Image 1 (cartoon, rainbow, N blue to C red):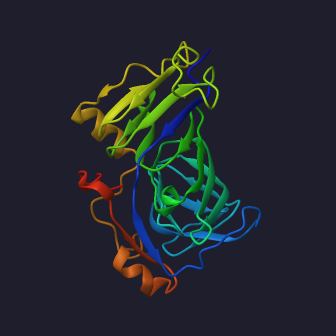
Image 2 (image 1 turned 90 degrees about the vertical axis):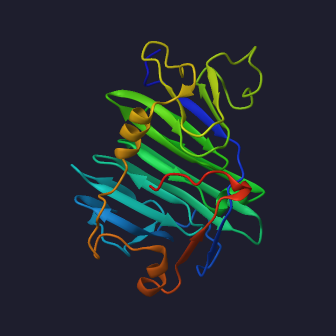
Image 3 (image 1 turned 30 degrees about the horizontal axis):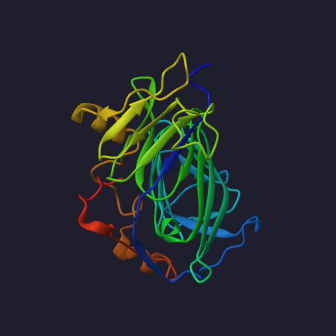
Amino acid sequence: MSWGSKLAIVIAVAVGSALSGFAPTLEAGAAGATVGMVTKAENQAEVGGVAAAVGSPVHMNDTLRTGAKGRLQVTFRDNTNLTLGENATVAVDRFVFDPDAGVGKATLSATKGALRLVTGRLSDMPNKDIKVSTPFAALAVRGTDFWAGAVKGQPGVLLVHNSRLEVRGEDCPEGTDTDRRRCRCAVTLNQAEEGTYIDRETGCPGKPRHWTPGEVDAALSTTGFSVALGPSQAIPAAGVAAAAPAFRLSASIDGGAPKPRAP
């Protein structure tokens, strides 16, 4: 099995955030429904084949792309933040957020590049189903802040914020997370800045360990923005309402845990 074999990452953590404004409900099959907006863009970036700009709407079935030195951050209706590094492609296959019914569902398909996902209110919903597929991993998300990509050409997964993150190979079907007798190609990340690299020969995650500051910085730099963005390149949380009155953002992390590094 090559490192390109699918893995699954199961994350169990409570992450709280608050969002007001947007109409809460989106039907899973509503192709073209607005599910979020661009909140940061740098260099080459596009949404649905159109050059991305701060405030650009993101719809169901849109494909997000970045080019050389490009960065793109999309904030979804529940305050989930998805950030793409350079030369990345992610399709928004599904998004449903209905807090009244307790439903939060999202499906994203990444075909190349690095990404970072900081979940919002979707992870608080009793009926949640958040999945992200990548060229080397399939992520089933329950709520966290994590990064997936490559460091010096080696694919890996980094848990940025304290939570629980289960990484399993395709020989570990869903439902075998806790049964190590049936699932040996699996590891658990449960501390901030703990990560795993994917073995190129077996396709399994390696032994978890705390990544060095250099490794963490190298990983997060692949999805980080320039220190100074011009007014047309970034929209702060306080300014979102001015750009789009129905889209106001705020976020907090439950439990008093250390704040995650900024995307």
